[in-house]
Length: 163
Image (spheres, rainbow, N blue to C red):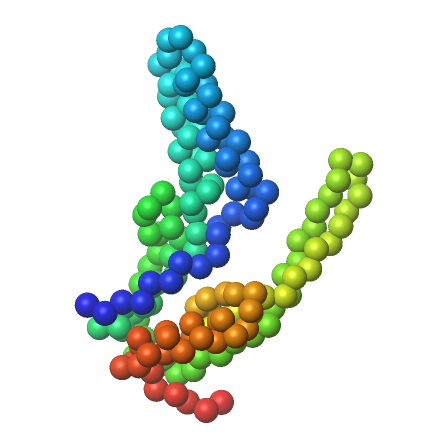
């Protein structure tokens, strides 16, 4: 069974990841600091630990099953891939777009700052007309190199169409 499995961007933004680290540290300290661990403290610490790990490890992904001609856009949650496979006959086109991502930060005084950054996103289009996000990188050249590798892997179902 031939598959292409790409782990994409993180599900949560950076500031949430920082919160996840704090939850993990807090859970570990709660268990290790007490002389005796009560059931309530143990369960609470375990829940906080799992939430922290979830926040740190959750990410988007894409799996293309070449033999069955399906793709699955999934979310990776605690090691489990959650998503529904979609059928297609062939991949018609690969392309890269430059995208500007914006985020807004606020200080404790209420001042707001916009942060903009450019990234490159690779997409592919299947015969059903769906456009699916494939990969992302800050450098177009690196993304183009990976895109060529992806094309080689799925070459048996890639039928280029000019449009």
